[in-house]
Amino acid sequence: MRKLFTITAAFFLLAGCALFLSQKELDDRYGPNPPVIEAVYVADYMSPPELPRVYVRASDPDGDMKAINYEIEPAGPHQVSYGSVFVNGKGGRELSGYLWVQERYQGGFAHLRSRGFRGTLRVEDKAGHQSGPVSFIIRAYAAGPRAAERPPELARFEEIALGPIQYELDWVRE
Image 1 (cartoon, helix red, strand yellow):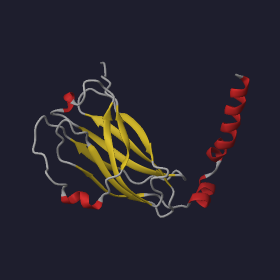
Image 2: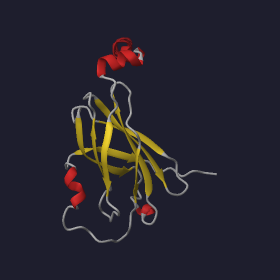
Image 3: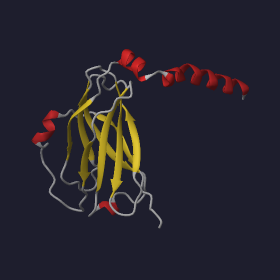
């Protein structure tokens, strides 16, 4: 137990040094430019059993993108979910792909059939700079036309899975 504590303390001491750098030192190390979300695409509707996909294309002139931060605001009496998808190794200067919405609730997307939710994305770099927020809406319907081909809007995005948006269904009790 003592060895584990020593290793953990040493790790946080060494890795935590970056936490104590000033913004100027971070800018000198990683660059002063914030990332930019160039485009986001979400289909107008989603039919089960599809999982909603949020296509995103972003760039960072400094090449140090770290994470895609998201916020999910469901319709109805639910709490807002927050999270991050880390993009290390998937892109530094340019990033293109999709995030899929993965709900942590056994009932599936049944409660979204006529509601949907609003989401917001921001890209963060290693210096702590964030892109401007980009919002989107996902609506789910029990039935709807399914596209036989990929929509032309998706030609700007790559079919690379970037990671899940974890959506937690928590009822708000009043």
